[in-house]
Amino acid sequence: MSGSLPCDLSRVSPALSQIESIPCKICGDKSSGIHYGVITCEGCKGFFRRSQQGAVSYSCPRQKSCLIDRTSRNRCQHCRLQKCLAVGMSRDAVKFGRMSKKQRDSLFAEVQRHRQQQQQEKPAEEPEEGQDPAPGEAEPLTPSYALSTNGLTELPDDLGGYVNGHATDEVKADSAIGGFYLDIQPSPDQSGLDMDGIKLEPVCDLSPESALDPYCCYSSGDTSPTDAMSELEHLSVNICKSHMETCQYLREELEPSKWQTVLHTDLETYQKKSQEEMWQVCAVKVTEAVQYVVEFAKRIDGFMELCQNDQIVLLKAGSLEVVFVRMCRAYDFQNNTVYFDSKYASPEVFKSLGCDDLISSVFEFAKSMSSLQLTEDEIGLFSAFVLMSSDRSWLQEKSRVEKLQQRIQMALQNLLQKNQREEGVLAKLICKVSTVRALCSRHMEKLSAFRALHPDTVHTRFPPLYKELFGSDFEQHRQALQTKKKSTEMSLTRFSLRLITIATVSQSTSTSLTALRTSL
Image (cartoon, rainbow, N blue to C red; front, side, top):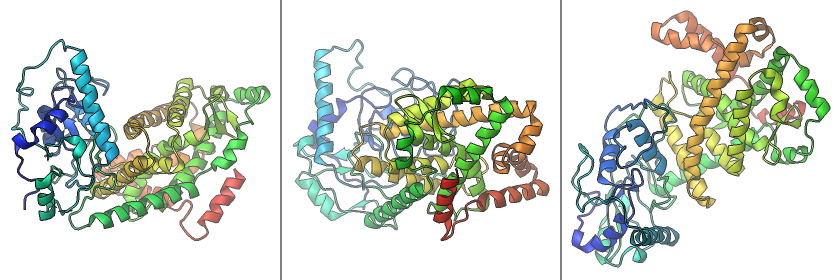
């Protein structure tokens, strides 16, 4: 049975023309319908399809911020693909669900808005009707959906009858009466894209234009929609609970402390510390925060089933990123301070570190995260998404990590929709990933410079976990993976034992974390 029904263009043309009045969400060219969950032109549809058909790896020769429009879309494949993913184009195998009245009204309102703009403004340059897409990207027009002649506003709420990627007879009957169905586009078997940024492979559409219900996606033909969504709910509850149980500070503990800021006398005390002393203080604080992140990771369903190498890779690469993400909980937007050493501290407190640019960037990131006003559950799921990044180098079972990250992303998307967050929140969060990675890279640069000046301080005074997370031991292991030196593999084993045994999961873990909070 076919995954999509034959489409009578004469029957659907009124509704199709309404959709086509909205420009392509990627490049702004004339759209041809909803493709891979997003309103796009034929060129961008074809580009996205080709990007998913092989082990493609694009790179940007500039700053990964290229403008993508109708004239420049072919200049940078990396930025074009990132924009496709950011607005919600999905390579998921199956999509089904229903379009709510709110979603229909939103889409119809956008159609009307664009029509009014077209009437009020005469475009300076308008492509002729039937103009071909950009060279090398033309494809036959394949309508991605069927609509009744009643148009968008008459679409039924329910869309049922999709099983394992095929339309059932009930759906066919409904469409004949005046229903609608989405194109079911099977994705090619693909291990994933190795991108420079975060691996973005949304299973649910991320775009506000998506006509799918939040509970509309499943990735396995052997799993029923009900069971798949039940699994997602379970994962979401598990991650949110794990987040709350492993937060270094509870929000009810932080709120009263906002009145306790670092006074002028305290500020002088911090600024009089030597660079070595201040680095040591911060190294201890970071290590304490990392311990909670390690425990958080170990409580996430699926993490402990990963091989030990991949657990270490994910924790080493992502633990500080999660610390920075969690910092927004302890950031006071009103006076630009962050909770540090039992008081709220301004950037001036960290002056003696000798890295003002890094501190300024950290505070700016905390401010931007805080401005999103995320709930605890949203912070927890985003933290898990950041931590389980499947694009980390040296993963041995990348596909398992990839599947786990995809499920977390689906859970995060569902939660944002359930919380009725404004459009674009998920896209903003995804953009934060590259920002927090840049922060961590800058931290490594500053640490390397400090270690060159004060090697004895790092060796004798820094916490062992901090040295192992951000030291050179793991870099030696990465080189050993290429030369297969067993001595360095033993070094990884020692590192593994230290990191994985931190805050061991047991019945007494909650008690130990409470005691640790109290002692800090």
